[in-house]
Image (cartoon, rainbow, N blue to C red):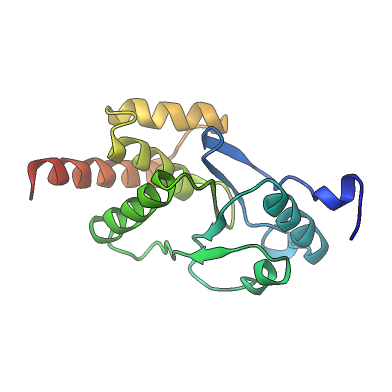
Length: 173
């Protein structure tokens, strides 16, 4: 077994805590597209494993490279979050599962290809859906501050859908 700092792996790119020590996001381990590197992916998966994440959740529509988690002994889940999905259907399912996992005290890391509007909107929507941040505008602002960037129309539309889903949930509809 390797020892030293390399045995601890490297922190994934664009890593951000959404809920400190519980829920984090990052870009796809190893990068994406022509910037993807197998060695970097291995090092980042080692870091994830060594930092006690219960599992990695891949939100990428395809199941590419999920075997890399198995190779490093890192549990994973695949919750496809494709742009074509009906948000009114998928958000309650995804948020309910996320809430269950976090409620069980698990530390989770979610990723898409990149940390962009879709994952930002998904996370702001989760904060809004749970009521941790009960005002939609505030949920967007919180995630923008965490990420250090503004959320565009795609992300905002996901948060708005989460607001509608949360409202229908509280109304019993």
